[in-house]
Image 1 (cartoon, helix red, strand yellow):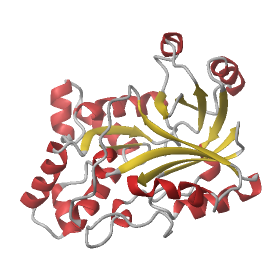
Image 2: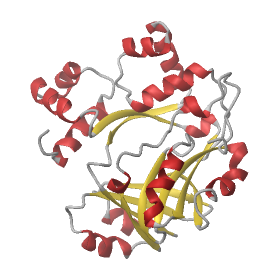
Image 3: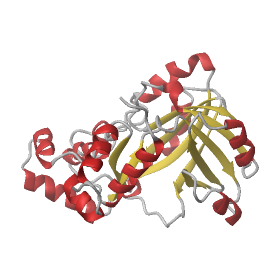
Image 4: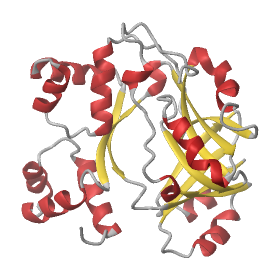
Length: 300
């Protein structure tokens, strides 16, 4: 494969963001761009460095989102990460070095199981901290329950993995007719469980990341990093999480100097250290087969 060009990856992601489930021909016509150029970029990068994913409002499904930071000896990081990756309630894991040396993880915890978080994390480390995290800007949250059949969990996994999966393929995987699949997707969209479809850039395109925690999120910070590839989160009960993604080919020292001035504590993500370890985010493994609710986060 030819060298990955970040600007091409980002261009493809931007185009697919506008029409996440549309055909390439339709997208080319709507955007007024050459179909063959689009197809070349699509064939080169889609499924490797860019994919379209359904983004869910997990609060509607009774799940709370947490970010955890665990101290893990460097020689044990891959072993612990592999153990954590078996748990479908831990959808994201990264090696980190900074205010904690070890692992950063995202947790999706059923609202009635939040009292089990300490017991879960203590399996992996004796030294950890975690925060409930919500999207920025924060909006009022009402936490619902899982009240769908098990088939919806399977469909949600398909849409999460690749929202551009064809209706025919979805029908084959679920053993249901295409009209039934269309109805199920519409139901997820109309109830707001599917918030949107997002064109994600695989973090192997950015093999480093900066994680910072701050008590205040000033306009100065927002203005300074407005044009960077950053994600913002609101920490509960107080604070903000800032994540900034970049390449190891860039001057990491300069970035640390630039960014650390705006946060209380910081760390660097090394995404490539856990290459080959894929977290299990599957709803089909979180949900009981009878659709009656969630399994325990301690089962895995």
